[in-house]
Length: 297
Image (cartoon, rainbow, N blue to C red; front, top):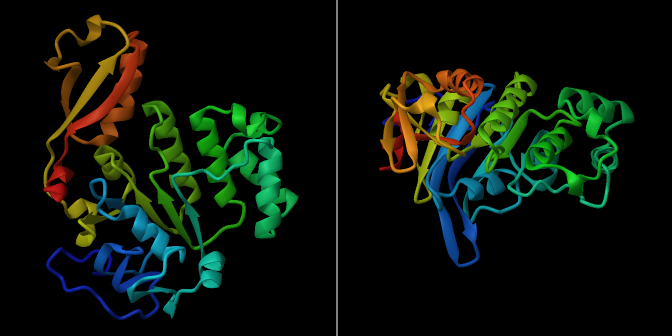
């Protein structure tokens, strides 16, 4: 499937001058196959959100595209050429679940370590300290950072040297809503004119950040289309609080959650800010119903 094709369009098998393409890719781990015949072609810079339930093959796809796993069938192409480990290193960055930052070093030392590997300069280290707004943390030990601070540092690492393709595997997982929103904003700012594959379990996040969506189910690509082409406008968010809140008295209740219907994910940041101004101590904000849920059924 080419970027922008509908779910019924046959997969594009020509590599051409596409940024990234998979042709009939099977991949997995020893005797456990995960991906089955995955084919698509990305021919323009944008953020492509990769969705799917646990076990759908999102991380396996990222590891295969990055050259960490070798396909058992089919092939991955970057810039029209079959990928190998060196071309992967030269053209893409992969941010996995594990941030890979050494706990025994300070933030600056950790970035300098990776800069030496990537042939980046001290000026590049200073640049990402400013871009990711982590200069005040430069002399702090990585082991002492919060989850959100560690995520900023790990993202700074992959922007030391610019690449044409970024693979971001659930970069906001386990972060509170405010920090997750800040991380998304940074990624949007830093990844302009780049191809970004961005996996997520958060369907509101997918609608907020992605221009395209790739859906995986049981290791097969079930949809590749523009986000704007997906139907449905029925969004329900659920809010859990640390203590009872009078501001939520008129909201519908479902178990521990207060529910509210909104028109789209772009309303979530403003809603969070409004609740915080009213003194609501938020514990969790999550999607309860989302048009993208149909991709998982």
